[in-house]
Length: 315
Length: 318
Picture: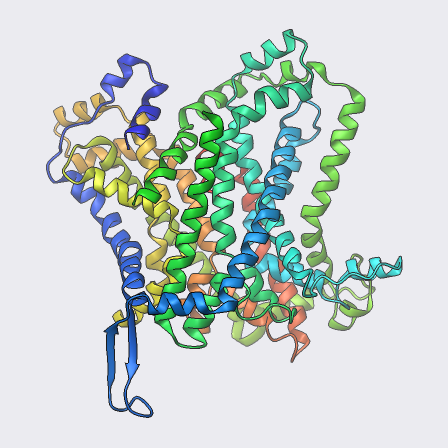
């Protein structure tokens, strides 16, 4: 928390910093101001997390043939976790997301970095139009984007498949080996422009003096990009990568919608789809809770490892 | 908590560029683009523009396809080239059917989405502003604990809480009501985080003290002074929350079973899932998709300048 303090005030001159200190305890006022947020935060974040952890450690047993003799809820230790991890399909879905992330996240980050650098370079014409065109998909909900792309993936409907087969190239977007990358395409399409905007914002905060100094030194645009722009947009790159890693593990809408047209996608294709199926198709909320907790833990762990790696390299 | 506290400390560094980007904006308005374009060569301009145009084709193709598809009859949809218009122009018939199908349920879904996203984002922004301001400008017991919890909340993905939230809401009798989607939409941990940073950097304590000397109450000072100064951050928080709620699929899917309460994402997917049995749903779906992306496309282009990337939340592929 102290880190936040130092950084936020770092830009302000010392005199301003003194004046912008806190305005005292304020009596009940801060509590009145924060209570609506706090109440809703407790209800929709803290309580569900406690419920999830709680139910991931309990087990409901029904006695009698049809559960007519009553329901007993008991502490189950790590039984639900063991059951979740013993489920080969669930574990496979996590590995599938690793594979997906190792390919899709770098492709997207490289793509959006190149686009941001090109748009911010002096050579780009109509940058406003291109920026809007790239950013547009972010405003289209993932489900709708998937509906759109699914029409472009389905044989008979897709003009892309028609055109490719006209030149003798058979395309199958929905086969067992290709459908994962068809999903990757939808995700890349949706979020590249958005990540590009984050990077552009950071590029715009680079002081002009640095560009001027580089020009005086006769640096080429390639050199400027490599030695000035890339090192200075590092925080934006780290941020977009971390959120992409977390997002990858949350993948749900795309495979769920494509399920109807792609038989290769089973009901446990991604970890989240797996938890959803366990909860609503098998009505096993306790194992589903264990799966949700595991997904969140893996997401935290991966972001943590990634941040550790990037921190070590910078220091 | 250690696992969450560490990454957030790093995020802070990149997120706290509020003053940076403000400085950059001032610089841009002075028109420094001219001095950067000095080294422009025609050949390079052509190559870069061609590359950018090709990438633009990729991003615009699905939107173009749906415009073309929405003008076709179901037979033409399969019989003619998907990238070009068919001889029969059926756009108005298709859109008419989208709007009138099932007693105008499409308009109802659209109105639901506007309600969830509009009301949700507005209230979420107000609550985040009040909370962020309180954390930034007052010293009170538990302040750091609250902030730490909220920072952890920024990193908790929405889909992780949706399932337990459903269990909780079913016990409270809230599942399958407007509240079940609206209540979780009112909380934006990221918004509070951003508002706190912004209030810290921009709201001057001497102004608050001047307000007190004038006899204004603390709440009045927040509403007249704090909210006004924080407006730029509030616009960003509002837009993120608006798009976040509008695009949300998992939460309403888990919560709602009554199709009258569906937002547009759930409704259109409901139509799409019926195309195998009834091919007429192809036309309803493409027409509905077209109608639903028009307002957003306009909003994205018009509001582009309000998206201050340095203050952004990041991809949440829910």
